[in-house]
Structure formats: structure tokens, C-alpha cells
Image (cartoon, rainbow, N blue to C red; front, side, top):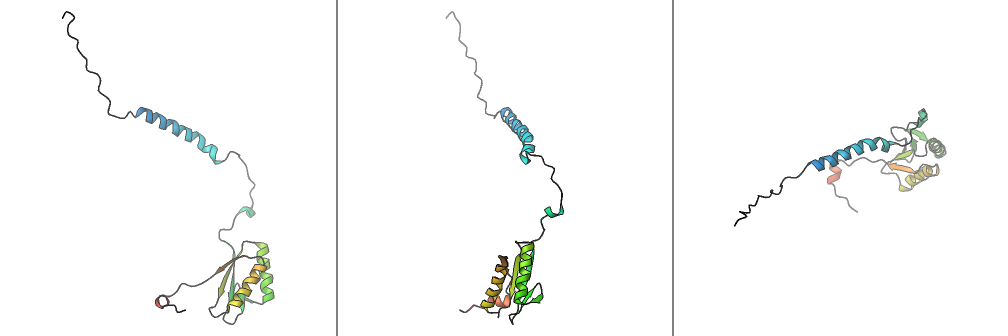
Length: 148
């Protein structure tokens, strides 16, 4: 044939590697966007707040300790009190800080009714957060079965 041979040139082989350039470009754009927007997210309104000691929150929650002994006597913060004194002092504590917690410790032999009376006095004074304090059982007590 007069035209000669038709030669085929080899076509380029498909690329089997991942092209990282677009991925890197996108990541750099995202980093720049985050760098620019992060300071704006913290606070959009700049304020110069006044300084005062009253603005500090107490580091530990305030609480009062209320103890009822075997005889049914009441102690507030380790001081013996009568029922009237207890109501007055708990009302003062509630007026100073309504979130004051009452930590109630009662002997195991104290009748349940006496514990409820003391809880009622605390609640009437405005102290509704009452925590019962107990001791963990000893090793001998944990092995003893409980009978109904």
C-alpha cells in the first residue's frame, strides 16, 4: 500500500496514584477559614466589665451540719440548739445563701419521726438541699447477711 503503515502510538497509561494537590489546597483553605473565624466565635461583643469581690463564686458549696444524737438532741455546727434556735439559725443561713446545703447526721437509734421533724424545720426555713451523711460499712458488716 502506498500510504504506508499506520502506526499506533501507545496511549498514556492510567494514573494509579492519588493526586494530592487538590486535597492539600482544600485543607489549606479550611485552615485559613478556621484561623480567621476562631477569634470571632469567642465573643462578638467586647466589654470591659467592672471588678468586684461580690462577683466571685465560692469555691466550695456552703453547708451547715445538723446532728441528731441518740437522745434526740439537736446540734447545729456542733453547737447544741433548741427547736426555736434551730429554726432561727437555719432561717438566717437561708437568707444569706438560699443554696446552702444541710448535711444531716443522725444516730442509727434515733426514731425516724425525729429525723423528719428536723428535716421539716430545715425546709420551713427555706433550705431544701438536705444531704444524709453516712459511713461506709466495715469489712465485717459487709459479710453479715441482712435479715428482714
